[in-house]
Length: 172
Image 1 (cartoon, rainbow, N blue to C red):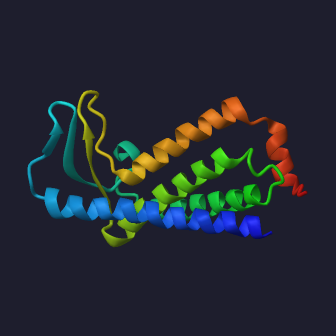
Image 2: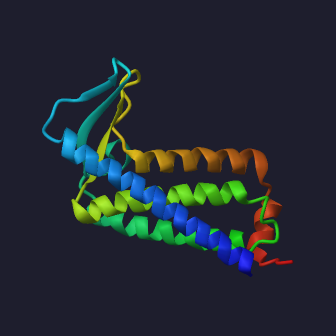
């Protein structure tokens, strides 16, 4: 029981730190990039460019603020539920990667949620020029890393039986 509470406390601290990093970078972006020319970090590769995104990734569903707020609450709630189930699992080390992915996903969702509440839009400012990638932010990096990690884990590491054990409530 103490180990489980410890895992959840560490996850909470990590989420707070990751969200703080995201919010600090956005504060700097607003202060230094809003109404300014792009700041070129690496010529023709990486720029910092201010953008107010009212949609989701790639500006999909622009203007759907209430929808995104509701979906974010549901996703964060589901991720927290799943994290708690994993924390209580008898196979604690087997799900370490999954717990990391959930912390990243929760952090990214909360970071962009805060923007939607505070501003009505998400502050994006990182532009990867070679492939004309959409402008993004640190919270988006967390969500992208979480998605890649979850895909790798589900495809190559975990079996159906692993998840059945977690949701059966098997504790040793």
